[in-house]
Length: 134
Image (cartoon, rainbow, N blue to C red):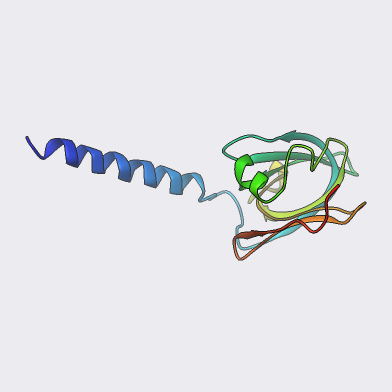
């Protein structure tokens, strides 16, 4: 009986760890591929656990792009609420969904705003300081 509490705590920790790993596994995405989409930012959800971008392409399709970084992590890389704005024209690159009709990207490797050259990149799973600011 004296070992019940430590065993229960270890089980809880392991269960939490496995669910966190499953949360980031993205089995419905082609993580070994990268595609780019270009369009106008129509919505930005700057929240935890991830930041979501909704981008309307020239042909009217709306993509959802999941930035794999929490808002606090992006702010440490100098990406804040005022960095990107609705109606900004952007190009994002990331892993596409296995179902092309879902119009989703995850694990964004790059977010660019061509008008002023602002670029956020991830190299070897680490964000690189954005190249320019507004």
